[in-house]
Amino acid sequence: MITLDLTLPDCRYPIHIGRGLLDRAGELMAPVLPQPRALIVTNDVVAPLYLARLEASLAAAGIQTRAVVLPDGESHKDWQTLNLIFDALIDMRAERKTTLVALGGGVVGDMTGFAAACWQRGAPFVQVPTTLLAQVDSSVGGKTAINHPAGKNMIGAFWQPRLVLADIALLDSLPPRELSAGLAEVFKYGLIGDAGFFDWCEAQAAALMARDADALIHAVRRSCEMKADIVGQDEKEQGVRALLNLGHTFGHAIEAGLGFGVWLHGEAVAAGMLLAADLAAQLGRQSAGELDRIEALLAAVQLPVRAPDLGLDAWLSLMGHDKKVDGGHLRFVVPDGIGRASVESDVDAEALARVLGGRFISR
Ligand code: NAD
Ligand code: GLY
Image 1 (cartoon, rainbow, N blue to C red):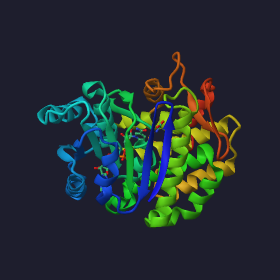
Image 2 (image 1 turned 90 degrees about the vertical axis):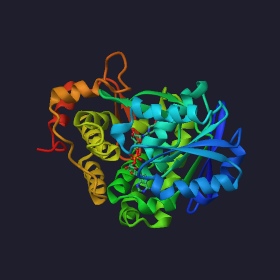
Image 3 (image 1 turned 135 degrees about the vertical axis):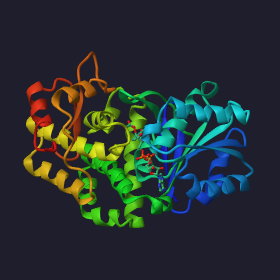
């Protein structure tokens, strides 16, 4: 087991990464739980796979549990489904010290975290991420939210978990499309801050797709190291944390524009990263060779390299709901070559229109 630490001004928590950690969950969680009671939040896909093992591990450590099983999918990341968590907490007479445990991908993790932030004005929570995307990104850093029909993750809170437990063995059951979606966020770290890691991703693309354990552990470890470092500098996204949103302004517009769940989040981020790289090329900050490398890597892991044609007006309207909009102005994370990125506030409208009608939009 590898353990990383995320250190913030008023808290610090471990991120455990390894194979076979689910059966050690009770032993690893017990020290951080303020009382030996927990509500496990999961969904109807993950529950039949892993809920019983988590319950057994917590019971063996003397932790009493209840479980609530949500309907699966991004289209259920909403108020109605969130209320099922509160109903379960009321029903079990949970207290402020009762811990919420998220067992699932980013949807379950974001919703459980938001419920924990709200429950009695703030209850402890633990992340047990079961998708690659959740292990490399969403379980770390304390962003929690639900969607509004008009915009992704519009309603939420910053609320940090007490512990993250990433068991790579759980990825064995992940559908291939979901594995690819997680790799989009892995590649994002290379693009924004580590050219050597991007090189490694290119070299290891086939091994990652084959779920080679060493390759997956390295990918999760390096991604979590970078995320913990960035969040440690800027928990509330006043500066450098915005770089983690590379491709997301375009990607969130794709998700909301097509209807939540039609494209996976990681797929939308992949196509969005290419649009951001094309924007960088239009601004003279990305070479044709670098653009080709990004496209080739995404294609190598079966990610989409053409965004849907939403139409210029719809793109602009949807992106106008992005959380990075500041004073009515769109802001984009733009890669500067490979391994560096920055936030652009005054993007030339003509350059943006060329991107949204350009080579990375499907015809
Ligand atoms: P997801 O949670 O919908 O999971 C993907 C699918 O895989 C679901 O059908 C799920 O039930 C299934 N699944 C989960 N684990 C499985 C397993 N081990 N075996 C088989 N099937 C499994 O999607 P996701 O890609 O994990 O997360 C996407 C969400 O994360 C989006 O809502 C996005 O906004 C959010 N997100 C949040 C942050 C953050 O910082 N909080 C960062 C990135 C993404
Ligand atoms: N996934 C973006 C962030 O955590 O800031």
